[in-house]
Image (cartoon, rainbow, N blue to C red):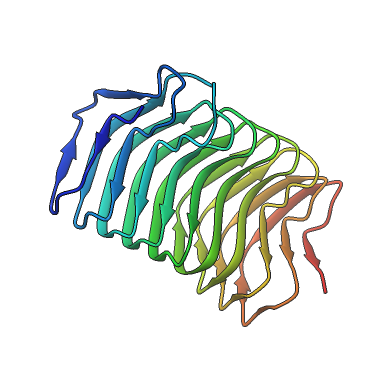
Length: 239
């Protein structure tokens, strides 16, 4: 089940390096769940999903909340279709120095949807092992997502580094994206992804495009990116 549910304003949860072990029985739950509480700070936590049974058990889940700051976290999920961080309609969130590992299929390092806005991901390390999986998946008219100075590595079939679907003003800078199998682009942007800024990143891919851009992706700015590819293309454009 769920370990912590935060419903009050202005709460600080400092684990001081201790672990949160959630869903140890395999029952649905989260390590930390914040449904609608604002101005929350979470730091110095190790958040572990206890068992791989069941599905949809994000370690951190926040819905309709504002002004959160997360610092120095280690997250490991084990079940299928689970996210290290799941965000639904949140505004002004920062995650800094967060290490996320997902161990099962159809999982997400960070899953952002339903109008999430002004989300900063800085100094993140994300590693996914399942097929398929996503380092970062942003969808549902989200905007102002920034990924800075981060490392994202996927190793399963069709495991994308970053997928942006229907979002505006995405910023990816000074980051390293590694995908190790086919059908696994480092960065993929599909319908209605506008005004992206992608600069000074390094992509390593194998059998997939380093960057894939689909129809209705426009007004993007790409500069000083380095793409190393084994058996695929550096940049793929689709109509």
